[in-house]
Image 1: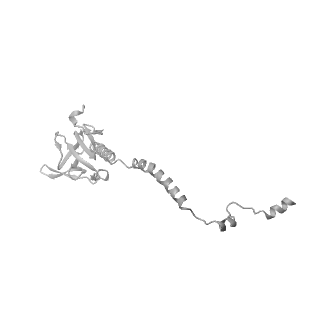
Image 2 (image 1 turned 30 degrees about the horizontal axis):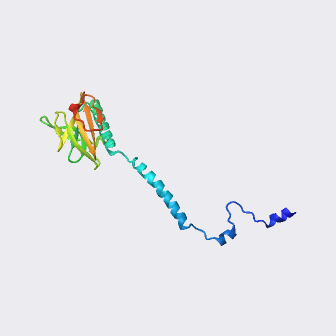
Length: 195
Protein backbone atom coordinates (compact mmCIF):
# COMPACT_ATOMS: atom_id res chain seq x y z
CA UNK A 1 0.00 0.00 0.00
CA UNK A 2 2.86 2.34 0.71
CA UNK A 3 3.94 2.17 -2.85
CA UNK A 4 0.40 2.90 -3.98
CA UNK A 5 0.27 5.95 -1.71
CA UNK A 6 3.68 7.08 -3.00
CA UNK A 7 2.44 6.88 -6.57
CA UNK A 8 -0.49 9.13 -5.82
CA UNK A 9 1.73 11.85 -4.39
CA UNK A 10 4.57 11.43 -6.93
CA UNK A 11 4.14 13.70 -9.88
CA UNK A 12 4.42 11.89 -13.24
CA UNK A 13 5.53 13.86 -16.29
CA UNK A 14 4.54 12.86 -19.77
CA UNK A 15 6.62 13.53 -22.85
CA UNK A 16 5.86 16.96 -24.17
CA UNK A 17 4.54 18.45 -20.91
CA UNK A 18 6.41 20.85 -18.65
CA UNK A 19 7.02 20.64 -14.94
CA UNK A 20 5.29 23.79 -13.68
CA UNK A 21 7.58 24.17 -10.69
CA UNK A 22 10.66 24.55 -12.93
CA UNK A 23 9.04 27.16 -15.15
CA UNK A 24 8.23 29.39 -12.22
CA UNK A 25 11.73 29.11 -10.71
CA UNK A 26 13.78 29.83 -13.86
CA UNK A 27 13.47 32.38 -16.67
CA UNK A 28 12.98 30.86 -20.12
CA UNK A 29 15.24 31.87 -23.05
CA UNK A 30 18.92 31.78 -23.94
CA UNK A 31 21.79 33.39 -22.12
CA UNK A 32 24.23 35.66 -23.90
CA UNK A 33 26.96 33.04 -23.50
CA UNK A 34 24.82 30.39 -25.23
CA UNK A 35 24.12 32.73 -28.15
CA UNK A 36 27.82 33.59 -28.52
CA UNK A 37 28.78 29.90 -28.56
CA UNK A 38 26.17 29.08 -31.22
CA UNK A 39 27.27 32.04 -33.39
CA UNK A 40 30.92 30.97 -33.06
CA UNK A 41 30.03 27.46 -34.22
CA UNK A 42 28.08 28.81 -37.23
CA UNK A 43 30.97 31.16 -38.05
CA UNK A 44 33.44 28.28 -37.97
CA UNK A 45 31.29 26.16 -40.24
CA UNK A 46 30.80 29.07 -42.67
CA UNK A 47 34.57 29.65 -42.72
CA UNK A 48 35.06 26.19 -44.18
CA UNK A 49 31.89 25.84 -46.28
CA UNK A 50 31.72 29.13 -48.24
CA UNK A 51 35.11 28.79 -49.99
CA UNK A 52 34.05 25.32 -51.13
CA UNK A 53 30.75 26.66 -52.51
CA UNK A 54 32.58 29.16 -54.71
CA UNK A 55 34.08 26.22 -56.56
CA UNK A 56 30.56 25.32 -57.69
CA UNK A 57 30.01 28.52 -59.65
CA UNK A 58 29.60 27.92 -63.36
CA UNK A 59 32.71 28.13 -65.53
CA UNK A 60 31.64 30.74 -68.05
CA UNK A 61 34.63 30.26 -70.36
CA UNK A 62 34.02 26.53 -70.56
CA UNK A 63 30.30 27.09 -71.12
CA UNK A 64 30.88 29.67 -73.88
CA UNK A 65 33.40 27.48 -75.69
CA UNK A 66 31.07 24.47 -75.38
CA UNK A 67 28.18 26.48 -76.86
CA UNK A 68 30.36 27.74 -79.71
CA UNK A 69 31.58 24.20 -80.42
CA UNK A 70 28.03 22.83 -80.51
CA UNK A 71 26.95 25.65 -82.80
CA UNK A 72 29.81 24.91 -85.21
CA UNK A 73 28.79 21.22 -85.31
CA UNK A 74 25.14 22.14 -85.85
CA UNK A 75 25.87 24.58 -88.68
CA UNK A 76 28.19 22.06 -90.38
CA UNK A 77 25.45 19.40 -90.30
CA UNK A 78 22.78 21.87 -91.40
CA UNK A 79 24.94 22.91 -94.36
CA UNK A 80 25.36 19.30 -95.50
CA UNK A 81 21.69 18.38 -95.01
CA UNK A 82 20.24 21.46 -96.73
CA UNK A 83 23.04 21.75 -99.32
CA UNK A 84 23.36 25.45 -98.50
CA UNK A 85 26.28 27.66 -97.62
CA UNK A 86 26.34 29.29 -94.19
CA UNK A 87 28.69 31.70 -92.50
CA UNK A 88 29.40 31.97 -88.79
CA UNK A 89 30.09 35.66 -88.28
CA UNK A 90 32.07 37.06 -85.34
CA UNK A 91 31.90 40.68 -84.19
CA UNK A 92 35.08 40.85 -82.15
CA UNK A 93 34.51 44.35 -80.75
CA UNK A 94 31.03 43.49 -79.44
CA UNK A 95 31.75 39.87 -78.44
CA UNK A 96 28.87 38.60 -80.59
CA UNK A 97 28.50 35.77 -83.07
CA UNK A 98 25.68 34.67 -85.37
CA UNK A 99 24.92 32.45 -88.36
CA UNK A 100 24.00 33.91 -91.75
CA UNK A 101 22.80 32.34 -94.98
CA UNK A 102 22.99 33.69 -98.55
CA UNK A 103 20.19 35.71 -100.06
CA UNK A 104 20.48 36.25 -103.81
CA UNK A 105 19.62 39.79 -104.82
CA UNK A 106 19.95 39.21 -108.59
CA UNK A 107 22.69 39.80 -111.15
CA UNK A 108 24.94 37.41 -109.20
CA UNK A 109 24.88 39.62 -106.10
CA UNK A 110 24.63 37.66 -102.87
CA UNK A 111 24.00 39.11 -99.45
CA UNK A 112 24.34 37.08 -96.25
CA UNK A 113 21.51 37.68 -93.77
CA UNK A 114 21.12 36.41 -90.22
CA UNK A 115 19.34 33.08 -89.85
CA UNK A 116 16.09 33.10 -87.86
CA UNK A 117 16.44 29.47 -86.69
CA UNK A 118 16.37 29.56 -82.84
CA UNK A 119 19.22 27.04 -82.65
CA UNK A 120 21.44 29.37 -84.70
CA UNK A 121 20.35 32.73 -83.31
CA UNK A 122 22.80 35.50 -82.47
CA UNK A 123 24.66 35.15 -79.18
CA UNK A 124 26.60 37.61 -77.05
CA UNK A 125 29.42 36.42 -74.85
CA UNK A 126 29.20 37.21 -71.11
CA UNK A 127 30.95 40.43 -70.07
CA UNK A 128 33.82 38.53 -68.43
CA UNK A 129 34.72 36.73 -71.66
CA UNK A 130 36.63 38.49 -74.41
CA UNK A 131 36.70 37.33 -78.02
CA UNK A 132 40.41 38.00 -78.56
CA UNK A 133 40.72 37.18 -82.26
CA UNK A 134 39.59 34.85 -85.03
CA UNK A 135 41.87 33.35 -87.67
CA UNK A 136 39.74 33.03 -90.80
CA UNK A 137 40.05 30.65 -93.76
CA UNK A 138 42.55 32.96 -95.49
CA UNK A 139 44.86 32.67 -92.47
CA UNK A 140 44.31 36.29 -91.42
CA UNK A 141 44.22 36.94 -87.69
CA UNK A 142 41.37 39.41 -87.18
CA UNK A 143 41.29 41.16 -83.80
CA UNK A 144 38.88 44.01 -84.66
CA UNK A 145 35.62 44.30 -86.54
CA UNK A 146 33.85 41.37 -88.17
CA UNK A 147 35.03 38.15 -89.77
CA UNK A 148 33.50 34.77 -90.54
CA UNK A 149 34.06 31.06 -90.97
CA UNK A 150 32.30 29.57 -93.99
CA UNK A 151 30.35 26.28 -94.06
CA UNK A 152 29.78 24.66 -97.45
CA UNK A 153 27.83 21.50 -98.29
CA UNK A 154 31.14 19.78 -99.09
CA UNK A 155 32.80 20.83 -95.85
CA UNK A 156 33.87 23.53 -93.42
CA UNK A 157 36.72 25.94 -93.95
CA UNK A 158 39.38 26.12 -91.26
CA UNK A 159 39.21 28.67 -88.48
CA UNK A 160 40.66 29.44 -85.06
CA UNK A 161 38.84 31.27 -82.27
CA UNK A 162 40.61 32.65 -79.19
CA UNK A 163 38.61 33.39 -76.01
CA UNK A 164 39.82 34.94 -72.77
CA UNK A 165 38.44 35.22 -69.24
CA UNK A 166 40.68 36.97 -66.73
CA UNK A 167 44.07 35.28 -67.01
CA UNK A 168 42.77 32.18 -68.78
CA UNK A 169 42.86 31.85 -72.56
CA UNK A 170 41.20 29.10 -74.62
CA UNK A 171 41.58 28.20 -78.27
CA UNK A 172 38.98 26.54 -80.51
CA UNK A 173 40.34 25.18 -83.79
CA UNK A 174 37.82 24.24 -86.48
CA UNK A 175 39.11 21.45 -88.72
CA UNK A 176 37.99 20.99 -92.31
CA UNK A 177 36.11 19.30 -93.85
CA UNK A 178 33.94 17.93 -91.03
CA UNK A 179 33.90 20.96 -88.74
CA UNK A 180 35.39 18.99 -85.85
CA UNK A 181 36.49 21.40 -83.13
CA UNK A 182 39.57 20.88 -80.99
CA UNK A 183 39.59 22.89 -77.74
CA UNK A 184 42.83 23.88 -76.01
CA UNK A 185 42.90 25.43 -72.55
CA UNK A 186 45.64 27.83 -73.60
CA UNK A 187 46.37 30.25 -76.45
CA UNK A 188 47.48 28.22 -79.46
CA UNK A 189 48.31 29.45 -82.92
CA UNK A 190 47.10 27.02 -85.54
CA UNK A 191 50.57 26.78 -87.03
CA UNK A 192 51.79 25.29 -83.72
CA UNK A 193 49.34 22.39 -83.97
CA UNK A 194 50.01 19.37 -86.17
CA UNK A 195 47.04 18.48 -88.32
